[in-house]
Amino acid sequence: MTEVATHALSAPTGPDRGDTTSTIVVRHLWKVFGPAEHKIVGTPDADLTRQELKAKTESMIAIRDVSFDVKPGEVFVVMGLSGSGKSTLVRCITRLIEPTAGEVLLDGEDIGKADQERLRELRRRRFSMVFQHFGLLPHRRVIDNVAFPLEIRGESKAARHEKAQAMIDLVGLKGHANSYPDQLSGGMQQRVGLARALAMDPEVMFFDEPFSALDPLIRRDMQNEVLRLHNEVGKTMVFITHDLAEALKLGDHIVIMRDGVVVQAGPPEELVGAPADDYVADFVRDVPKSHVLTLRWIMRDPTPDDALDGPAFPTGTLIRTAVHVAAATDKPIRVMDGDRLVGVVDRVQILTAIAGVIEDEP
Image 1 (cartoon, helix red, strand yellow):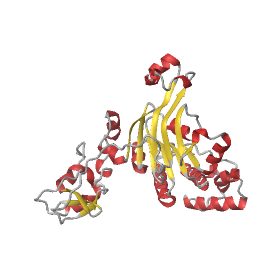
Image 2: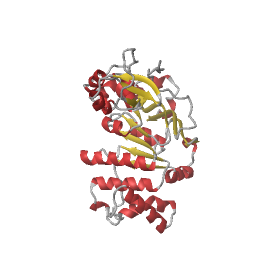
Image 3: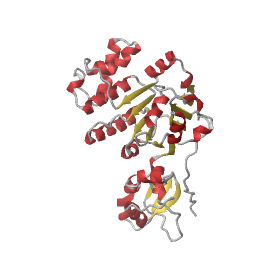
Image 4: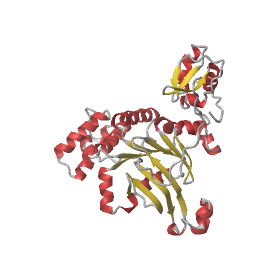
């Protein structure tokens, strides 16, 4: 009889300290604003709500004991509503804001221990940032804007222009190298910002709500551009957004924050299929689940009555991808992990999932 593997899913768990395979490791990160900044962490006051702490100390906890790992080459998305702490988080990671407590490692190097000279070197060579406001120099041509960080780095004009031109072409701005920023649309200006960040050839790219000011159609195009560039250049990306659709579209791994705390972390399908609490459930309530969840969420163990010679799909296949095949056969679809059968899915399960009825557990 064919071996059937268990398919119960559980929340991801990480090591207490950094995995050596992680590009970024964040451990027990805190950021407190106010006069009591360095008097709160490790005391009973750290357990107070934001409102209680503000009333008692005139200080506010923006980031509260946050830990996570970012793996090489993944798009890691931090999302939450305004005031959740997501932008403060990315600024603490890059030390644009000094954390109150905690540890941030980049390939094992403790960013918190870097002096100002080393920090400048890291920003010039190891990571780059793309913000909502493009920060382009209006008196400089596109090619000089893109080449600007290379100029700061001390590269020759010929070398930096050659690299800048390659990045301009890569982001779809070929023919605009000699234009000035005010001659470009908002979406094109954001592409210049993206090209400038890529020109540094950073190990990690940080995006802080870069597309939130763009029109919806341009925003969608820029999201597609990020996905295309990620597939082509394979950079590790940390992306901040308040938009769930954007997070689900871009993220390999998503962290949802509320009031400075991580309320759930995991791949998109886990957030949609098994929300940790009512807050996350409200976020994902209107998401078309068949567009996010895979067959492993609805598969069942085969029975003796099942024909096991029907169509086969890998476990990671989106439910909607299997719709047409399921509609064309009476046989259950085999769900495979490599050469191993791990479950089956029948037509009723597929159609029920398309209708939006998914059980809480796969």
